[in-house]
Amino acid sequence: MKNRNIFWIFGILQSITLGTIIFLMFRSLNMISEVEVIGADSQILLSTIFPLFLLIVEYTIYS
Image (cartoon, rainbow, N blue to C red; front, side, top):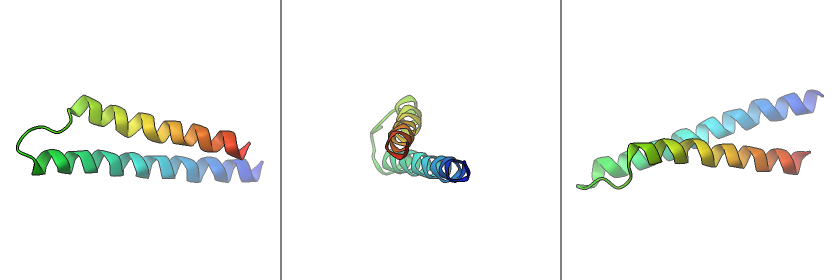
């Protein structure tokens, strides 16, 4: 039970960090480029769905 709690704590921290990195990467690409590289809705969608999917896959492998 204790290992499962530790997995969730670090898994959620990892997903939040990955989502933040993805969001800031796309934001910096939009700031550098003269045209919009990716829209704000796509930034938010990719920044949430990809880390969430990764967390689900890691949990499946863990269990």
